[in-house]
Image 1 (cartoon, rainbow, N blue to C red):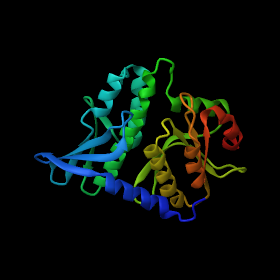
Image 2: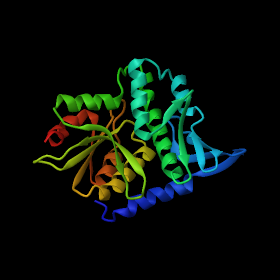
Image 3: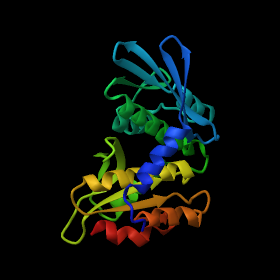
Length: 256
């Protein structure tokens, strides 16, 4: 375990500050390039347009949904539309036309940028829908696993962080007589930026809960094996992480 609680938080925020670049591209419009990468290893970008004094419109300019469409994924069809809506609503982000958008005020601008970026990362991960062998989305597979094991949970719960940012967690399992509150995060793409973002959320929210809390992660290894350093990184911050193929090893701990 890493003793200094704030070490990851400060390191992560510093990495973001160094990696974010802003450029004015039009009257009242700023392009923000972030250190986060999409599945093509391109830096995610978002755009901020000042609509009125103190009010901004943030958008991905249609990048994420456009890339999904190019990969064979459409945000259409009853279940698929519901799934996209569920993911986005947790971040307060909406789809307008082909764009992911959210409005912000001067005081909420940082939080809304964070929300839109996290929504872009979440939706970008849904490209697995385009794979012929994949009939479901990974997070739905995890939900079914919990249901089959009679695990009580609340999906997509927002936690406030010590930094002032809010974080959306995938599943919260309430405390019981046998176990404290537990959080289960789903890691579909165990890339460095995704893992660091999740660990930042863990360290940022852990002090604010006011009671003992355990963190777990299930990492998708259905397409490729999970690198040992990924599991070691979670372990260093007291997150018990397992590949999806070994999920039965934590079933009892989650159901207790």
